[in-house]
Structure formats: C-alpha cells, structure tokens
Image (cartoon, rainbow, N blue to C red; front, top):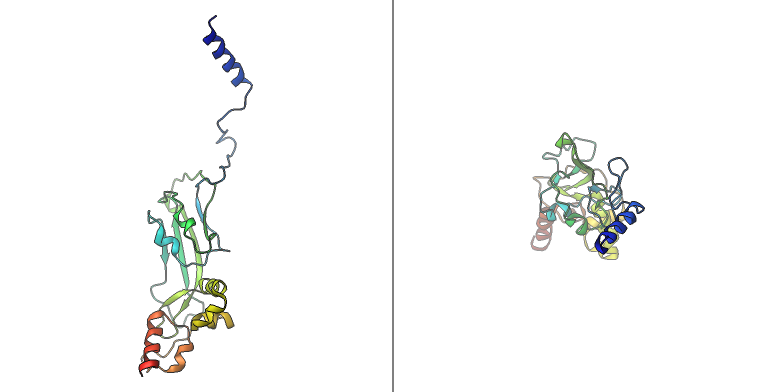
Length: 206
C-alpha cells in the first residue's frame, strides 16, 4: 500500500475517535460564540427610549412611534413605543454600537428565528413620554431625561427641564396656557425646544 493511502487511512481512524466539528442542532440547542450577531432585543432596564437606534439603522428595522394626538383629559401618561422588526434586520450591530446607554438594545446569541407569520417577528418596548406644558408637544421620555441628569451631573442645572427632573418627580402634564401671553415664570416649566425658545426671546427682548 502506498504512503498516501496510509495517510488517508490514518485520517479516517483519527476522525472516527474525534469529536464532530458540527453541532447537533436542531436535536440539541446550540449556543452562539461570544460576539455572535443574533436576534436584537430591547432591554427595559437600560433602554431610555431616546430613539438613537432608529437613526443609525440602515435597514429601517427600528421605528419610534409616538401618539399622534395626546389627550389632555387622559389621566394616564402618554407612551412612546419603539418597534424593532428583526425580519428586516441585517444584524449589522449599529443599534448596539450607538446606543447612548450601551445596553439598551443588544444583539443576542439567538439565531433560530424562523416563523410562519412575519407579524410575530417584532420586538417592542414602551416608555413614558414627557409632554410640553405649553403646546402639548413631545419633549422626550422621562427615562431619557433622568439619564441625562445622571450623565451631566451638576451641569444639568443649566437646563430648566433637567433641573425640574433632578429636583422632583415630574407632576402630571398640565394643559398650559396656550393662546395666552408668555410670561417670565414660564421658563421654569417643562417645555419643548420651540416653546422654550419663544419664552427665552420674550424674556430677553420683551
């Protein structure tokens, strides 16, 4: 027997007593290795609902959904909904890399994502919204403001909205005084950037 044949026979015997290189999936569940880009998921403990992941998603798989009309007579706080469709995701990892808290959305090791109905391929999370006390427009989420206060520290006192958040829990959103003349005390209210600009201009220039 020629030498190449002996070598092939040795390789066959060696492989017979070696562990297989492939996994036993689907009979046995397989866990991905570290750094594996699997199913993206929101983590409520760390997500602040800022929407940064939406801005950097090249596939458009993440959407921020705010209520179109915020009813002032509604006692419950309005909610912002973040919707992630992982059937559209290309697992690039931009959402995880650009998350301001670094843990709000993460790519897990889950890879078995086959479904019969694509409507089920959705990850959602809801966050309480903060609404402008003057015009009723959306400011951001309360978790986002709290995160900014913690991140900025004493610098947060330079912003009236962050000042209010750092000193106390936000009171229920009031109807404001839409249509009435702006006054200097309005500076210390929770407002959207547009209304705050109007108040500041009014305070400086009269």
